[in-house]
Length: 315
Image (cartoon, rainbow, N blue to C red):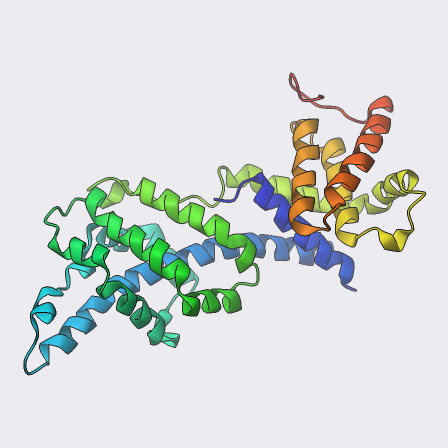
């Protein structure tokens, strides 16, 4: 699921787009931010549906084998068991899943070869042949083969990778979140009663997280010039064109968080933006950002502008 660092990444990407755009209508970028978050959920549903479709493909494969004049012993062994897999059946009966498939208009019919390629990789694997021989149909046992399909086939199939890259612009970054959500789904689906099995939540608490990213975006934009002046004061010996745009945006976000979010500890804020700089900016950005933010934090503290609520939040 999306944690606060992932959500900060989404805000950072939106601010980057805002800074390069001639359109300065904040509402438009709010919509873009929420769409970026929702795309993670859409990617998640597309992936679950791909597992669903791969399970259903065995019916087509069985029909093809049945049409053979002289089926082999292996033809006789490959059954349609996967289509009635307990995990897959529970997924198909999940109302939220069904509704989201409709909402996002999910369908792999645009490229049937994708589903076929997954089954081709699956059918001769030892894991699949063991699954066909297994008599235990409990969900705990049955979802093992679905985990195998996801981890060993879907995540390693170039055709699937290409589709997601084309469909979701943030796929390289969001892929990690997707894997966590699928893993959470496997954990959640543990009951033989389908009504007890829940999809993974997009965030731990969407109402709070929605407010967090909306305010972080708005305040960073609203006070952008003021925060830039604080940064400029501490970077007088640096030529402005030598400071990466991403570094500037990360520092503005950090300052906004330090001043406007009383429930977030100072250390958490500083550490989060240093970590973001390691992944999204230059090799030396983390050291640079850490040094500048420490100086700005000292000034803001002296001015009484850092007001944190709760024990231990100031340090």
